[in-house]
Image 1 (cartoon, protein in one colour):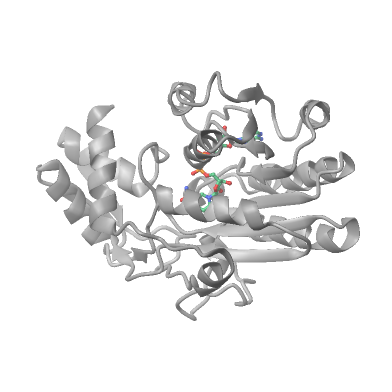
Image 2 (image 1 turned 60 degrees about the horizontal axis):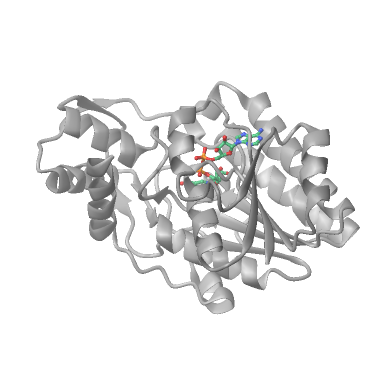
Length: 314
Ligand SMILES: NC(=O)c1ccc[n+]([C@@H]2O[C@H](COP(=O)([O-])OP(=O)(O)OC[C@H]3O[C@@H](n4cnc5c(N)ncnc54)[C@H](O)[C@@H]3O)[C@@H](O)[C@H]2O)c1
């Protein structure tokens, strides 16, 4: 299969590209090396990709550059992971999040379709469930109460893609990722930031009581689900939760597991809860299990141990 992977230099994109290349697919990557975090980290993410995939440095919003990438190869599928991630940074830049995540996605889908690409897989987010009180979150929930500009941008992009299925005959699968962690996790995400602080003997800034919980999902499981979705993307619009689907883990538990794995004590300073953050996320993964055969395997204790192993080696 020939695939365009946007966001290839990022946390999830680099893992996905490696797995696609390992199984023999042809991968072209597109990434702007957005300064949200250091370029050097993204270059390291690409260590096992460079030389095996053609990586183009371009911005999603640069229509000529994206059109050129799309015209150079007859892609079977576009996997769109590029975007501005993270709830908290979106609070100060709502318009930028809309531009990159909504307009960027719309333009990419439109250009892809114009080039005859009929299959599109999109990285959406559990944050689209927002203030939904019904737990676990299921794909047919309304998801019309986003709590941050980031969540709104992901939901809006889903809706644009859904419309393009009808108007342009694109086949789209949106994957709602639930707090992904593992080697190369973005440096500002909680598990990575807490791990760094404990390791260095610094104080962890923990917002809220620590009782907030997440359906933390190990990156290998997310990649497995994404590959299954890529292999099955067909006509029409589909959406799947890719979460761990088990018992969610509180922030306090994450801190304790990290301290245990590092063999160092955690110092915690508690601040007020952050506007935009949801209290709990739990994924209903029955649809992904039934349609994709998705079966997450890594529990939080094992996943954190693997993350700390990676962190300690780098
Ligand atoms: N990590 C998670 O827990 C999680 C959860 C839900 C959804 N997602 C979504 O999955 C995708 C990948 O997330 P990640 O954690 O790997 O993030 P990441 O920031 O590591 O990767 C995103 C990549 O997109 C690139 N990018 C940003 N703006 C771009 C632009 N305008 N043009 C081209 N490239 C651009 C960045 O340079 C980066 O390499 C994102 O769309 C994110 O919103 C992630």
